[in-house]
Image (cartoon, rainbow, N blue to C red):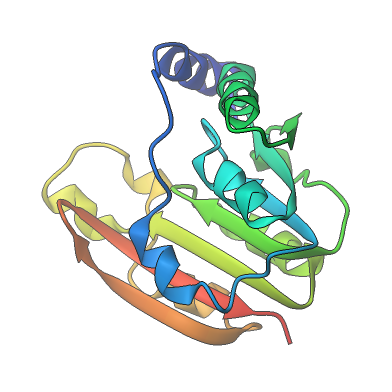
Amino acid sequence: MADSDRIKWDERYSGEPGLIAHPTWIGEFDDEIPRSGFGLDIATGSGRLAIWLAGRGLSVTAVDISPVGLQLARRLADHRGLHIETVVSDLELGHLPENDFQVITCFRYWQTDLFPVMFERLSPGGILIAEVATKPNLEKHDHPSARYLAEPESLRAICSPLDLIYYQEAWFGDEASARIVARKR
């Protein structure tokens, strides 16, 4: 990503007051999501999913381009008595921490060449949970631009090396998104 992207996200997170709860749809898969081991939250922003995973008992690494967002994530985790490791990384360069992760989350970030790297980092039996905005969003919104939106059914297709637990693509509220929960073979 360009420095302008980092600056944009730093500015956004510098004014963010607190944490939004994890997406409620994930709760439907509570039994599938491990409560121990290692978790990775990609494009963590202010850390809502990283903190949720840490609260489940996982050792979590949160990755984002924004140092300001990561600082907010650490502060919010500390406030809840939790610890998360944070890593500033330009995901367009494909750099993800090395580990065998039992859970990887990736929300609101679509970069097709990053998915095979995520699959490599998942431990056997590990769970991927992802939600990405899709191109039908452009029917109602100018942002994000098409560059950051998935084509219909492309999240399912790119995750085909994994065993599908759940997939849904629809309008959720005012936003068109694709959601997936899948397990590494």
